[in-house]
Structures are given as C-alpha cells and as structure tokens.
Image 1 (cartoon, protein in one colour):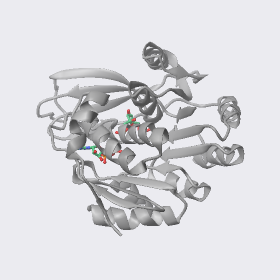
Image 2: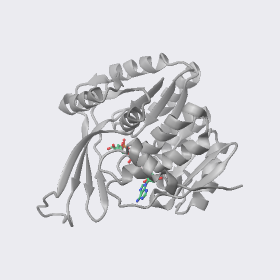
Image 3: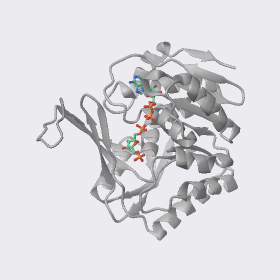
Image 4: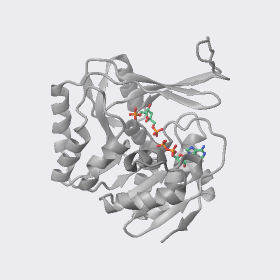
Length: 304
Ligand SMILES: Nc1ncnc2c1ncn2[C@@H]1O[C@H](COP(=O)(O)OP(=O)(O)O)[C@@H](O)[C@H]1O
Ligand SMILES: O=P(O)(O)OC[C@H]1O[C@](O)(COP(=O)(O)O)[C@@H](O)[C@@H]1O
C-alpha cells in the first residue's frame, strides 16, 4: 500500500487578480479552494489514476474538517491525527506572476507526534511512504530523519519531496525516489542551477549519495531523471500556465502510479512530466485525460 504523509496540510486558497497592486484594494477575477499539502495532492492524484493510497499527517479545526471531508468524498482512505489548532490556509496568488504565501501550521504536541510514529512503525516492506512538504514550525527539524529511520527498520520504501536541507539528511537511508526542483537542488549544493545539463550533473551526485531514483524538475525548461541504469532529459509540453501549484506533486504521483505497475521507470518518468504540465495548465490538479493529451509532447533523450 502507498501511504502519503503530509505533516503540514493546508487549504489552498487560489486567487486570480489582474495586475495586483500591493498596498491597495484588489478584487479577484476568479477564486477556488482545494485541499493542499504535498502528500495530500499525491493521494488525490493517485486516486484519479485508479491507485489506492492512505493519506496521513496532522489535521485540525474547521480547515482540517474541510480537507478530511473533501478526501472522503473522493474515496481516499485517511488516517490523520487530530490536532487542536486549525490546519493552515495557504494563499496562491496568480497575477502577471505567481506568488505563494504558505502558513506555519498548527502546534503539534509530543503526544500527537508519538501517535504518528506509532502509525509509521506499522508499515512493512510491502509498503511505500511518501513524505512530502514542509515541517510545521513547532515540530523538531529532525522529524524527517527520524521517520525515515523507522522506515529503514521496518523495510518500507520511502519517497521524499522536500526542500534541500531535508534531502541532505535522508539520502543515507536510500530513498526510492526524490524529486527536487532546480531551486531545491541548487539549495542542496549551494549553487544556482538553471539548465538541464547542470541539473543532470548535480542529480547524478544525489544518486551517488544514496537516492535510488532522482527526478529534477525545471518548470517549463525541462526535467531530468537519473538512476543507476539511465540518465534521461525530457522536453516539457507547451501550453498556457494557469497555476503550477501541485505540479511537482503531480510528477511524484504519476511516477509512482506507472512505475509501480510495470517497473518501466523510463515510461513512468515521461508520464510524470506530462502530469506536471497537465497540472500547470489547469486550476487544480491534472487528470488522466489531460496527461494522455500532453504525453506525445514529452520526448526523452538519453545521456551518458
Ligand atoms: N510553465 C510551465 N509549462 C509547462 N510545464 C510546466 C510549467 N511549470 C511547471 N510545469 C510542469 O510541472 C513540473 C514541475 O514543476 P516545477 O515548478 O519544476 O516543480 P515544483 O512544483 O515542485 O516546484 C515540470 O517538470 C513541468 O512538467
Ligand atoms: O509544505 P509546503 O512546502 O509549505 O508546501 C505546501 C504547498 O505545496 C503544495 O502541495 C503544492 O506543491 P508543489 O507545487 O510543489 O507540487 C500546495 O498544495 C501547498 O500549499
């Protein structure tokens, strides 16, 4: 079974404003609300691709209820730990550029944390845990390493989609997949990464450091995939950017959905790039129909 862990879920409040002006009253052209947080997005996408998962993490208050009910309506199994304070609301502002304001998240008590660790201890080598997104400000910054250590002991495989400083700590435990974007990869190596060639160079180092499969995304500039056997660069489909929120999560979900089914990681990577772009060209997440439509535009080239 695939488990997704979102330590810091959100309600994503997406607003579209023409020419936003700071310090003035702005009115929206359109708006939408969705459950958010990286693991939750992965569960929602997997479900749309017909793959079951269990979504876990911490939820609280009226916003937490909204997220839980939304997932329930979509038929997604959940196992969230209830916390006292409200789940955060993240603001996603689309104007001439995209601006995000993400909240810190609620207080998580020691007791809440123990409940989560007990859950993760139940996983077996048949399971995959997707750990994704930021750490709520009140949790210890070592939480990813601690949970990955538990996976290591139980034999469960794990995927990490998080910022560079977190990636550094989990690589020795050999994650099945990591998916930094080029900013996160740059943060990891203390470099600015702007091209697929650079992403390939540093992505290969992540494999040497312990990752089994690495995808580096560079938004509309392309994406690279590296494991012990192949190094691939993908072109990215062209289209109108509506909102890139969840684009990275869409890549992770699509890679797992395809790769777990037939072990063809090359095709899984191609599907994951199409899925990222299908989300970028939508308000909300990609759909299998939209991914199939974009797939012919994703071309792979192999490098040595
Ligand atoms: N402007 C865009 N045009 C086409 N595809 C995009 C665009 N922005 C994002 N994507 C797609 O989404 C994927 C992930 O986007 P990226 O911004 O790199 O990651 P993250 O959402 O994790 O920051 C890209 O590999 C690409 O497939
Ligand atoms: O946990 P973080 O890093 O604050 O990110 C949370 C945000 O990331 C998202 O999951 C989107 O992630 P991506 O755009 O990287 O795929 C939003 O739904 C959510 O608001």
